[in-house]
Amino acid sequence: MDLLPFYRTSIKKTLDEDRAQILAGFQDILKRGARVGFRLVNYYKGLPLSYPATLVEVDRGLLEVDVHKQQAVALENNRVTFIKCDYFDSAMVAQAQNVNVRNMTASLRDFAFVQIMAESRNSLRLELEPQTDAEMRWQGTLTPGKAIELSLGGVSIRSLERCEIPERSEVALKVMVPNLLQGSVSKLETKATLVRISKEDGWDICRFCIVPDQQSEALISRFIFQRQVEIIRELKENS
Image 1 (cartoon, rainbow, N blue to C red):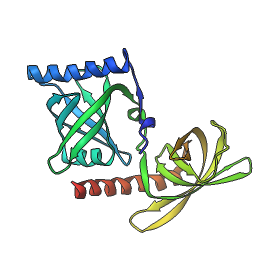
Image 2: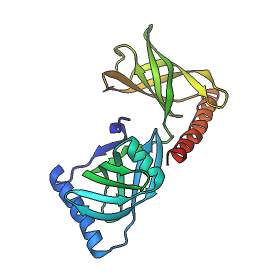
Image 3: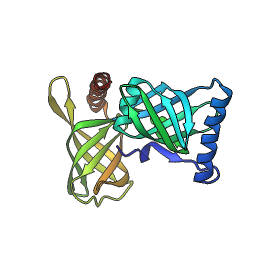
Image 4: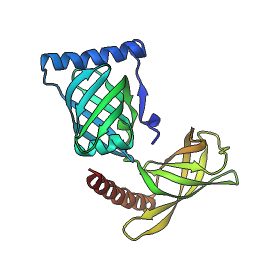
């Protein structure tokens, strides 16, 4: 998962100085045995996971932590995590390595201060697995794609052709939304505004803002509920 839409780096001095400050802060917490709130936040297939973690030691630029078993699964899936610690006045991002799901441990490195943009979202945005068919129509031109994320406020589509739609354009979307209980799909048709186009693995990823009508909202809400249940079940099975 591309986590760039989830956060924005907030450099206070320089990246290296910030990283040194963060490590020094964790060393100070451990040295004094201070009791401070410390938790990790991950977005597993779009579902936010926020659990307390335990600081173990700082060694050669690595922070060793004990983590919740479901958090360990998320860390193994995507080696990036956000950190919230009462000692610091900003959230942080870090790379995870040496993740051990069975022992519920991980090593964190490459720290940076960030603002977690995903926390300002009004609705939950979940990944579709498998991706479903989608179409983007603008000024009479139809561009095929695959829906990769969906929420009550937006949809992300991987364009199967070079996307020539200008950002901020109003587009007619057609997205196939799965009913996970019945193993079927329903067609969602809505107007949308293209917010941003980014490149991921050579594909154009088009992110849209939508304002669904009552019928579309019910369709999306059903998917979000079913998908949450599916992801939570997957986390439990893998942990």
